[in-house]
Image 1 (tube, rainbow, N blue to C red):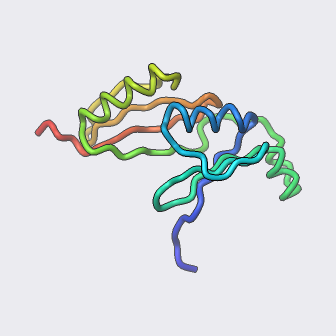
Image 2 (image 1 turned 180 degrees about the vertical axis):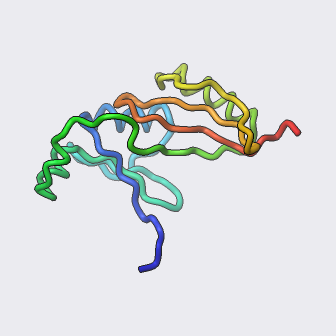
Length: 132
């Protein structure tokens, strides 16, 4: 098998609510929509949201019915500059994202900021540091 990712699917209890967040707050265009699945326009890797109940029905595996605990994945959004991280963070917080950690510099020469979506998934904005 050639190792590569072709699709990232976020599992959701409220597909419409989460899809609306990714569309209106983060700017993803919706490419395909049903009541229990939304696929977005995304360059490079397909990106979707699917209802937990649908995944349970398709797989018949009980793990899809269990309440999730803790952070299980992170989406990281690259931006062109430190300034873009700061500006984008403010924009998405004002638009409804939950603030987790304000923009800050890391020891590995990145500018990062963290926010959560409506179902509590924590994601990151980042860029190479452009202040040096």
